[in-house]
Image 1 (tube, rainbow, N blue to C red):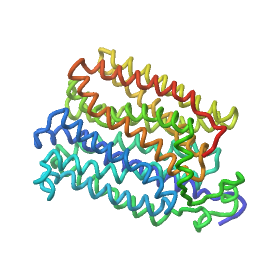
Image 2: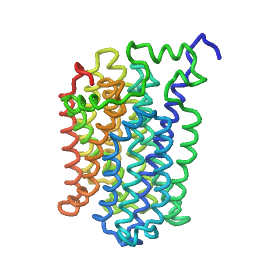
Image 3: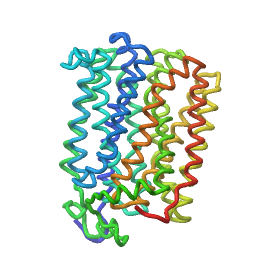
Image 4: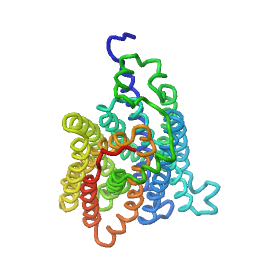
Amino acid sequence: MTEHKPSRVRWQIVGLLFLISVVTYIDRVNISVAGKELMPVFGLSAVQMGTVFSSFVLGYALFQIPGGWLGDRWGSRRVLTLAVLWWSLFTVLTAEADHLFFSALLGVLGSLILVRFLIGVGEAAALPNFNRTVANWLAPSERGLGMGVSIGGIGLGSAVTPPLVAGLMIQYGWKTAFYVTGSLGVFVAAAWYLFSRDDPREHPGVNQRELAWITRTPGESPSLLSSKQAMADMLKNRSVWFLTLSYMMLGYIAYIYLSWFFLYLVNVRHFTVLQGSFWASGPFIAMALFCPLGGWLSDALTKKYGRREGRNGVGGAGMLLTGLLIFSGAMARDPYTAIVLLSLGAGILYSTVGAYWASTIDLSHKHSGALSGLMNMGANLGGTVSPTLTPLIGEAWGWPVALTVAAGVAFLGSLLWLGVKYDEHV
């Protein structure tokens, strides 16, 4: 290996995070498509299915901070490997929820809720440890893009899931969809463990030029730390709370797409299962495209104008535009116009993700895993509400009203960015 120019192992690490992100969202979204067949088999109503969706998000929300703390303390290499294997196992077991030993005690609905809750517990470690990895492996000027690319796998994973699951469901039955998607994680976990390292200095492929680039900012060399005092400082920091509350608004909206968009197209816009599986990919393709673009834009503006303009500007403007697009899509009479507008709304929503996650590193580099876990817990508390509340609003007042509520949530998320400042670090 030549030392004349930096090696690029850090971007291979980001590529692996992207793959993990893809699998994460395949295993998260699969049930929203398989639900078309699963609901009548298990005798579930739309509101009961919303409770199943919410149970995943509750587990995901509650274990964000522990997942990030473990990454700070033990390293993302081990924690991510175990997490992927954990949620992959319970993804497979989703297909057998009515035959598991605790189904006799909890009933089929209770068994399904518990399994999805446990998938959420495993996936909770994913994004905080993405952030821990990016903090260790990328220079400050690359972190927005790094998180944008890593989390961009959300879009690809969610986009391929509807046609993949629908095809498996039609050809082989809905249970096969869980067997296949759950098995993918085993291969990704093995690749991550074999190639990744917690510290760039431990990786045999990293040369001195790349290491110097990664650690060129004084005081930001990689470390695995955890501190009760740091957590106390986070909870007292106003900017942390504004950021967390704003991300909670993003989570409320995101889980409408993740849980209900396919069923919205089939049940409300009256597409067939195959048509719905095709068009349901629209928002997630937009996410995959806009997520890294937004991260790159946030880095570029931060470098030129500063963090307030680069992080808050992209985050605040993106949430505002998301609200306008969702409202317009909700009011559109033509179903194809609605799909375009709502898909763009999802893409713009995820263009803000890089700014959110890079902001947690800007606020606290050494404890970015725990801090990002706190922020993402907020997102998933919001996401716990929307899968159940949205169909309730839809049944009571119609889906245009349910989506208008989501647009209002996006406007509030935009305003909350005004309170995020970077003059006090955790």
